[in-house]
Image (cartoon, rainbow, N blue to C red; front, side):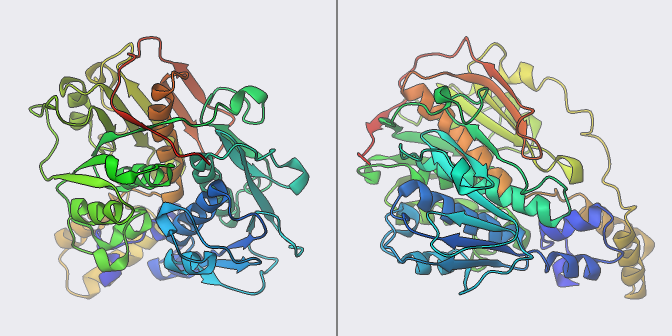
Length: 460
């Protein structure tokens, strides 16, 4: 029963429970253990963008696919990505929770990254990119030109590949059977069009403030860590949170490992960022309406809150640029994301002036597995009130997947990068990984041309 507390329950397990696909929590666990992701890496893995694809796919995949991530390495290379610098490709796979294998099975979806030399059968997707565009296609001949390196397009493509594979193993009829992607330069355009590629990356942010270090905040840091800094020690990242990691965070927290349980999120994230060379500043206080940024502190705020009061207060904290991401909830919404940037036509207080229509809705405990758990709790001696409270607490935990946060993180960091190079700005990007083609990207006509601090990108 220890893994059925609200703090410990795995989000993939909870997804199957809330969807009503299992009569008991044990049955839900058995279902999730059949979820396996396979990856094949071929020639050309020296590419920074392909390395970002691989690391993102392994890191997010092992948090969603409880049956594991199995990787067949066809050619060994030394990793140059900051998140795996100096490791061999195989060592990096194992470091991020993947399992090396010599063969892949037909029954599980497979992502092929690079130029594979051996044939692969079954459900296959090819993560691909060109410049700021990234996604997946069903055949090698459909791949983008892959000429201009841009690691965040690799993060996006890796996350989309895991998303499509996850939807497939859960029975979605179109998951992993389509070409799907997005341009981080022009999200409103077809990701395979010439205008979606964007320019080579020249400027990188030198000072950012990450507000909230849960699912989204760690995803922002994951993307920041892939950027081609010539000298990461010239970059300052302020990290603000007050919470400690719990077991359930493993499903969504891209920088966390099992040994980090009960550690303050600020300390864990700072340690990870400092390993790859960043300077960090720890702020262990709740963000609220009283907080104000000093002129000597980072002016770019990357917000990953899960409450409306904090979001409304963003506009009064005197940041130069605010980028906020919010994720959807529940079985039907966990693949959704919405990215806001400020200043814009509305202030944060105006944007979140009213709560979402489902904000006050109590979590449902009507699924069969909750009823079975209630019987178990009562048989173990819990009172009716204790049982009800325990069930509601578990049911109230959000269904989530790390690959959704990784995709949102790439979009958030891209908004900052576009602001530095005079590119298009967006007040809102609203999409779902269930169907990226049905998205909204609203231009931001009121964005300011501020200089939040930058350094030059290294040549790639």
